[in-house]
Length: 199
Image 1 (cartoon, rainbow, N blue to C red):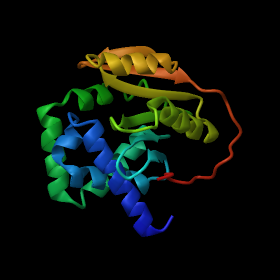
Image 2 (cartoon, helix red, strand yellow; image 1 turned 90 degrees about the vertical axis):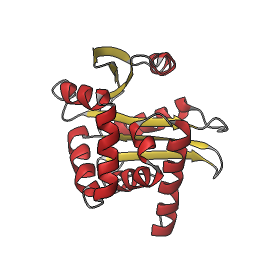
Image 3 (cartoon, rainbow, N blue to C red; image 1 turned 60 degrees about the horizontal axis):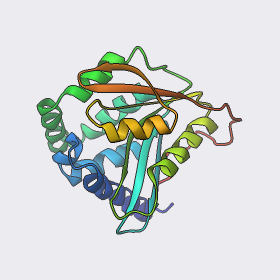
Image 4 (tube, rainbow, N blue to C red; image 1 turned 30 degrees about the horizontal axis):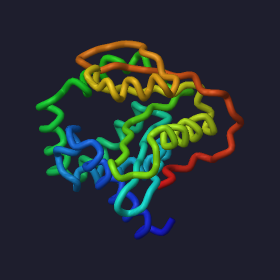
């Protein structure tokens, strides 16, 4: 993908994130912060981005094959944009539950052989379904050798919990108002190299 096309695709994912998930700390930090986050993810070889739909409506999903490394690399890249990083840090300080839960679960999540769903969103006008996006991300995980997929969501988000339950995820733990879930993936032969995102 050409750099201009890639930049446009990442800006589109950021815009969809803001529409589909307006209550997240990253959305509240601003669309430029979301663009910076997705640009950092797109440069991470462990990350996978999948988007679908047209310019006015669609959905996206982001995940990683190495949660700890991806988080560290994204923080390092965001540090080059101190004002954006500061806005995101303030939003996370105002609602730290997600960050606290992820830190608590670091030892539970396998450091290898597992994918982690970072975020998924579908705009209200989208023709694409969340299940199709999640399936595509799980396929990317499995094709890269992952045997499990992990995700977390808010304990009060009954819709998300029901969605992940229908998709085969089972609860592993609860902490700080967040729920950690996991699902076994079918083993597959490696068909992709160490590529980055599909966005």
